[in-house]
Length: 313
Image (cartoon, rainbow, N blue to C red; front, side):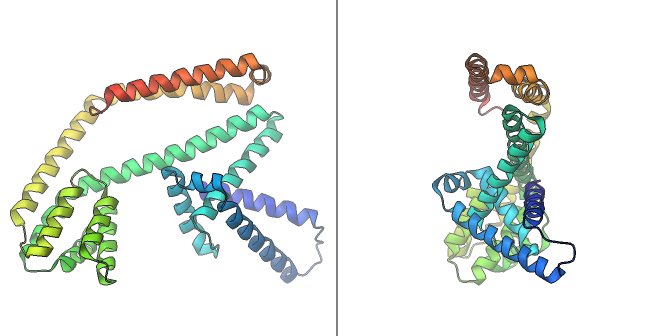
């Protein structure tokens, strides 16, 4: 979604520049390609300068935005676009600003533009958070198999590097990629303790710290820790069963909380897009104050609900 938004904005800007420069139909295609290449290089340099500014640097440090920027960097690499995280964050900000201006021009109202930008930004952040939660669940579900694979590999006399490489090549899912990266780090000469610490940080599961400690002990003492890893696999399976049971028992409550929290924001966004009377009222101090107060009350209610449900859901 982020890459599609950026490509759409870039294509629109390119077409506008093409029309404004007055390129005729009879101009050679080589000249047009060179001009497009120069415009693209200038755009990348401008994004690099914008990415070093303080607001964009702060924005790129936020978790969801940084993850979106990293995905944009990986998605733009096959097209020959050399971007870093800061330039990608600046590109996302520019694309979002272009979407806001386009919506404001289409609906002839700045309120509609802001509402459209808020919807797009919220959708991007929500999709990234959902992807991270889905990845975390996949990693947690694959941990019992990883514990058993490590116990077999270490019990058969393999070193820690060989066992990690075996897990990375034979397991599936996001956890396999984490172990494959740890194997590459060990091959490149990174100390074992540092590589294991990075492994636990990238896994992000509740048992990652125990796994890291077990791997360090196995590396230092040469003990396979077979019983410990098998016991950890059993505990991870039981934890997964409890989490699934809790998810089923609280599904209706969580759905109700999401609907209640999202309904005011959705209603405001829809009315800001389709109702001219609501747009005019929102531009007045009274209307803006009422909407701001309602948003603050909704945020306070959400914080209270999260506080009450902390450690339960």
